[in-house]
Image (cartoon, rainbow, N blue to C red; front, side):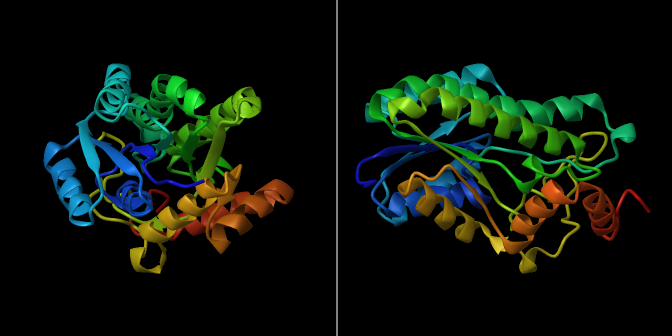
Length: 270
């Protein structure tokens, strides 16, 4: 696939993996549409893209609102005339034991991560079908293996994996490509912005961010997989090992995962 003049939508693209995807896809010649919930952050990312000579458009939108996703598709078509690739990246995390978790936090995570991907895909799909394009879901290792104190996040990623697997099978005979990308722990602000039991942001990552895969590395892997129209990718050696062990030794993984997460800074298990 040649990305020259392809129109790529990246949801949640004002930081982290989303912003990195906007940059690497734009450097390949694509026209980029970014979305986010903060106009200030959208403007900052647009400024960065435009300094790189990337033609781009920013749309203020909340991934968890259906009407905002309809707007994303409509404004993209109005501005660029088409949609070729949708990267469903918008997402939030959480960190709290389920017994302590406010159910509104659970709903917010599901609305953003799962329903946000469903809504965006629904309204972009007609154009992608017409252009035989690509749909990318930025999922997680949590879509294969649940982690304690992240029940809502895990549920949203399992739901994403199932939805896109079913959709892929629906459209595979129509030359539409569906990629599910599952990064392992990636250095980004998702843990800083993770919601606590009462919905407040965590503020500080409990993990060593400097030892993780960078957002740029993840974005380059997603670009490569999109160009090759791969079915799915699992990133980081730790992530691949977790998927493998969880498939063949789930009981052992229960204990390994518990011990790993209990060692986190300010773990709710302590």
